[in-house]
Image 1 (cartoon, one colour):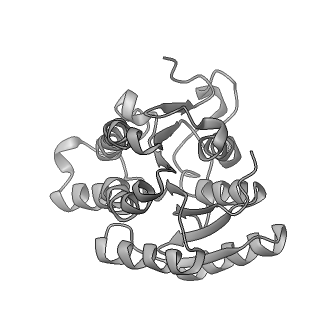
Image 2: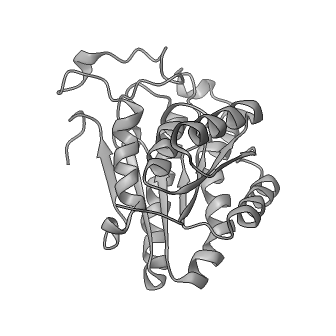
Amino acid sequence: MALMSKAAIVTGAAQGIGKAIAARLVKDGMRVAIVDINQEAAVAAAEELAGQYGADTMAVQCDVSQEEQVNIAVQKVLERFGTVDVLVNNAGILSLKKPFVEYTKADWDKIFGINFMGDVFFCKALIPTMKEKKSGRIINMASQSAETGGLAASPIYAASKAAVWCMTKSLAGEMGPYQVTVNAVAPGYIMTEMTRNAGYRDDMVPMKRLGTPEDVADVVGFLASEDSRYVTGMIVDINGGTVMR
């Protein structure tokens, strides 16, 4: 699945699943922009991947919930790489689970702003380029919470990921004539820095182990490649069997 000369943006890529995705793409020969709200961590991740794999990487600081910042970030990447062939909308945050009526509008706005509107803003910024080239890959980060309602996550988180799920399918239909595929992955219980205190246990999974960031990254690597050229509008479960469809 060689991706030489291709360029990608991975959001929330300074750590966890995003960093594993960026590593997978650079190992496949792709130039990668590490986009993260934490500038220092983004630079460190970009330098680490460049040193480890001899990759062409760059770090871009961006709050994905702010459309102006997203547009600036995309412009920086286009100026550096000349193109963006793959967009991985990975940036996201969890929210503490509590009774539904205790969530405020600010809680809803914050989670949806990052988990959903961030995807919207990056898609809006890059779709014109992909349509003009008549090629591209958009890969969004959904969650098994979108199917279960958030057994171990808050209703806000589950709802935000359900929105990603529906947008992915809708956008796949619109972008099909331009040979741009739009898919999402739906991770289950994945052990990362963000989920370390979420209470995930091996016995919650039929395969009797928690997922790793690399389990997710390998599927994203396929969806970013030419091997997935006829796959679009799919939500790919990566959960060790906790949800089966």
